[in-house]
Image 1 (cartoon, helix red, strand yellow):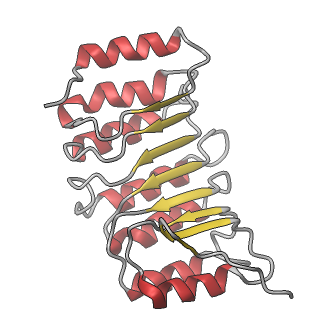
Image 2 (image 1 turned 120 degrees about the vertical axis):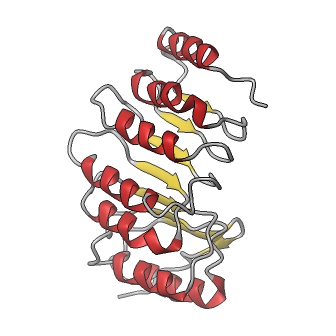
Length: 217
């Protein structure tokens, strides 16, 4: 069972607001569950000094958490720049999660400070997320991890990232543990090595970079 409760998360939020030099927090693999959805969302949205938050690898976080988080981060008080909500096994299979995440990303264009999101979505929802990214030029780092992406998903990525594409503003693309295979990796690498591509870091696995040397135009 988790050591966290509504009260302890509330106390943590209060402490963070009193400690301006603490700007990064990780609650990864903390056995958090949906009963803590609202206090977690409040922590993400109201800790005014927090810039990075990692909530990955929490099997109990599900639909209630997703709904509360998207609502909370949509509030003007949120100053988060980076959030990691990847590898949440209870959430990934839900068909509504990817489109919801895509709409949220699109809504953050303009005045939002959010520049990096790492999440896990069902392969059928990857395009929903990419369409959201295409509308938010401030989001420069995207992670779509811990999913089994088939060839069709790789083709979607190829059509959305790289020079002149809708998501050309991305500087980092992380597909760690998405199992795109050697063929998919080679296809994406070819796109990302092309002239005019802005991506400076791309990964298909912890040891597999998709960048390599750039081609000379």
